[in-house]
Length: 511
Image (cartoon, rainbow, N blue to C red; front, side):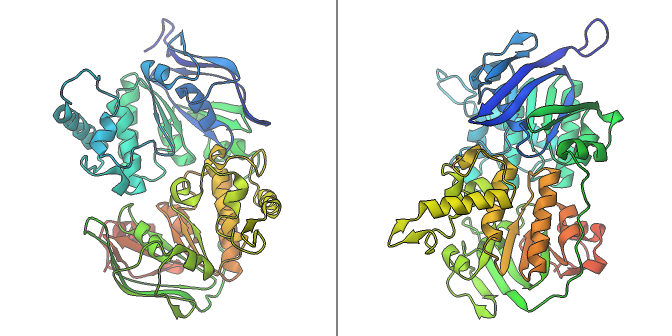
């Protein structure tokens, strides 16, 4: 929709938006207009204020100063109901789904009047299937959301907003867990939606996605709007420098001779609760001073592989050896006691206790140690000092160690987990999607820490959906497809095309 001058009419207008959390200034007098049918990418480091600004738009937060207009009408502050009524839909970075309900129930939740005598499930099922076909997403509408992988749950989030026919879509890192072909299908749909007049705000840290999809790019840094550029007038290098305020160094993996085996898996099998096979005869070895990357489309057994190594799941058969000793009892505390560090796939669900303050999360895996506990009493002052040191050492941007962890940005929450793991110098690390949803500066930081651990003698199992990350960091790569592992690719012979073929079940390396 365009006005009489031919320009796109204004769909959204942010007027001097300011938001503080205690003494932390998240948004600093942000003014911005977005046109009807425009795709605007919102960039910035973790903690720059992007999600805060979108949460103000969606009504989760109330701005301390400023106002928002939607299609020329003032938006009542602090009301998700008002935002939904104004046609605003949000795909959250952190899932807002009911794990005990089916996909169909989650998508229908809140969409039917209470006075209806019968639920229109058949009609909803047809609409959802049509949307899924357009997106080329494989979604089982009868599956319980709690049984889905992270990638599958992200697809449900995307479908949920589209099902509600939102006029303005906010997508917060929607491709963080999507396979490249799925992301392309999503982008094609978003372009069609924009052509039909939908307004789209796209938050991403993947600069190539931003340049491929958006009409315009807006960059926030430390709560301020620092750049607003048409995509045609900018570059990935310029955007990265606006985001972090400096040039970004490429990730380099120094040469390092592998040491003794720290992890050996032989014939590991594992079934899911529904009886399907998750791991099918996995053979895998990780040496000291070595990073072994695990590539694969989400849902092919990567999560279950991590759960076995972390002690969360006991395999049905096969053997697992750590540091030369066979593991017979699988429990997380036992693995931590064996000096295994874990960077979990889902930082919110299994990485931190979000309701607890940062200082408690910083010592969660060590709270029984004498440094933090004596005769059954917690040594809170010591724990706070350790957490404060962690904040300094790992550049965690927050008001202090007493902040509730749920209030941290995704990147800073990941730094808490990273600091908790790396500060105790583990001999073996399971890093599951360690940079998922992080900005380019935070990715650089996490990569540096992982490489430093490798150089210090740790063996690392790196599980990632990001093939670029796998290629940059791995000494060896295996691909998991339908629970089976390919033979290992050595770094010297890594080819993106061959790995991509193995991820779909093809190639000479696939078992």
